[in-house]
Amino acid sequence: MKKKLSYFPSWKGIIGYLLDPSSKKLPKILLVLAVIYLFFPFDLIPDFAVIIGWLDDLGLNLFAFWYVLKTAKTYEERSLIQEKP
Image (cartoon, rainbow, N blue to C red; front, side):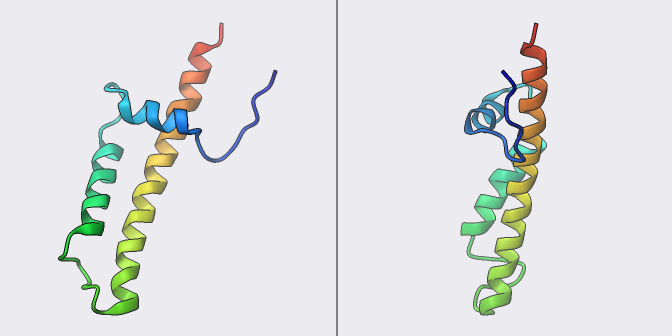
C-alpha cells in the first residue's frame, strides 16, 4: 500500500527526529533558542513597539519551526526508505 505523501512530517517523525541522538544537532539547538527567545524579556526589537516587536518574535519562531519540520521530514523519508526490504 502506498503511503500518502504530505509536506509535513508525522508527529512520530518529529518526535523520533528530536529524540534520535544521531540526527542533526543544529535544528534542535535552533528550536530551543527560538523558544527561549520567545519568552526572554529582551528582544532585538522590544515588544512595546507593539506590532513590529511581535513580528520579530513571530518571524524568528516561524523560521525555527519551519527548519525543524523540513529537517524532520527529510529524516522521516530517509528512515522510511531504509526500512523497506
